[in-house]
Amino acid sequence: MVAGTERSHAILVLTGAGVSADSGVATFRGPDGLWEGHRVQDVATPEAFQRDPDLVHAFYDARRAKLETVQPNAAHEALARLDAEWPGELLIVTQNVDDLHERAGARRLLHMHGELKLGWCLACGERFAWVREMGTAATCPSCGGVGQVRPDIVWFGEMPYEMEPIEEALQRCHLFVSIGTSGAVYPAAGFVQTARYYGARCLEMNLEPSQGSMFFHETRLGRAAELVPRWVEELLGG
Ligand code: BV8
Image (cartoon, rainbow, N blue to C red; front, side):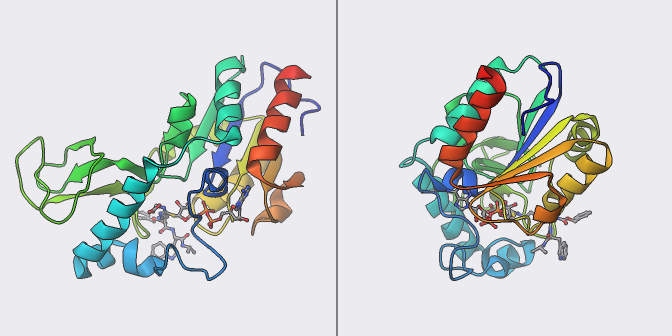
C-alpha cells in the first residue's frame, strides 16, 4: 500500500518478533508454541519472577547473550533507511526487546515492551544499561543494592511503556504498517483497530495472516527481510 501516501503523511510502523526472525532471533510462538523451550507463564510474568527468579534470569541472560551473536537484517536496515529519508512523521513502535532496530540506525523508535539491554532496580527505581549476565545477585550501579535488579522488560500483566505517545501517533497516522507480529498480544494487537478507526490505511506484512488480518486493507505474505525493503523502495523510490 503506497498509492495515496504523500511525503507529508505520518506513518506508524509496529514490529514484532517476525522482523528479527531473519536475524536468527527466536519468535515467541514457535511450532511447539513454546518460547525457547519455556511456557510464557513460567518466564514472562511477575508471578514467575517471584516463584523462580533464577529461571527467569537464566531465560533473559541467555537471550541477552545471544544478542551479541546476531546482526540486523535487511528489514531492520530498510526501516532505518525509511527513518532517515521519510520527510513526514514516522514512529517505529517495536514489541521486540532486542536492539536490532537501533543497531541498524533507527532513531524514531519506541520499545513498548522494554529492552534486554536495560536493568531496573526495584530498591531505588533507577533504570540503566545492562549488557552482561544479571542473575539474582546483581548490584545496582545507582544505589548499590544487591539482588534487587530485574530485567527492564514488560511482562504479561504489566503495563506496556510509552502508551500515551503511541495512542497519539495511532490517532494521527495516515498509514499504519504492522510487520512480523502474530497479533496475539494486547494492547499491541489492538493498534490496527485504533488506527483504522481514525482513518489510517492499514498494511500488514507477515509470514502468515495474523490474528488481526481482517482489520487490514492489505496483507503481504512473506519474509520481512524480502517484503520490507521492497515496500520502503516503493515509498521512497517510487
Ligand atoms: C497488559 C516482553 C494491563 C517479554 C511481551 C491477564 C492479566 C493481565 C493482562 C492480560 C491477562 N490476560 C490477557 C491479558 C492481556 C495480555 C495479553 O494480551 N495476553 C494474550 C496472551 C491474550 N497482555 C498483557 O499482559 C500486556 N499488559 O495488558 O497490562 C494492565 C493495565 C493496567 C495496569 C497494569 C497492567 C503486556 C503484554 C506484554 C508482554 N510482554 N514481551 C519478552 O520479550 O521477554 S509480549 C511478546 O509476545 C512480544 O513482545 C510480543 O508483543 C508478543 C507477541 O509476539 P510477536 O512479536 O507477535 O511474536 P510471535 O512469535 O507471536 O509472532 C511472530 C510472527 O512473525 C508470526 O505471525 C510469524 O508468522 C511471523 N514471522 C515469523 N518469521 C517471520 C515472520 N514474519 C515475517 N518474516 C519472517 N521471517
